[in-house]
Amino acid sequence: MPTLTRLYVKTSLLYLASALVLALVLALAQATTLPVWLAAAGPTYIHLFLVGWVTQLIMGIVFWMFPKWSKERPRGNEQLAAVVYGLLNAGLLLRVVGEPARAVSPAALWGWVLALSALLQWLAGVGFVANTWGRVKER
Image (cartoon, rainbow, N blue to C red; front, side, top):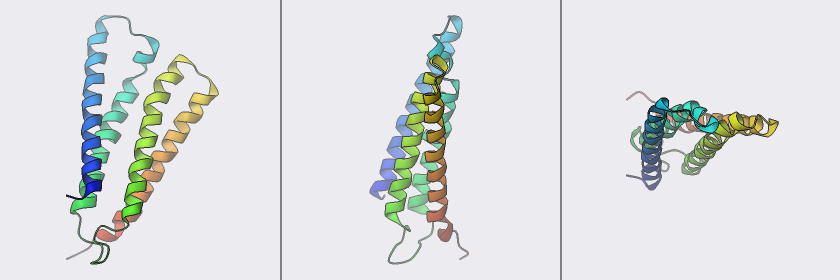
């Protein structure tokens, strides 16, 4: 298994564990009054689960298992795949911080943090598609 795939998969497992802990905290907290920042963590949970775990796991496995690009570059552009990893995780971490912060303080800064988060994740998606498209071939 390529090093980058291991990084994607291990990071996705950390996000899964984080999402499950947050889900447990949110479920247990239903019996009490939630602090504002924790009450706003519902979307954060969804992002940790879908982007952090599911999307990242898929990206890592696709990088490893899809048909070869060429003999010289079997997995396409490995530097681009590493940049995609960085963009996806930077965007997700900004989301994890920005979502609850925006609930506590509706300052414009937090709106920009969320916009930057979305942009970074979108760029990661575009980079992933660009690097994977040529590997989807007929036999």
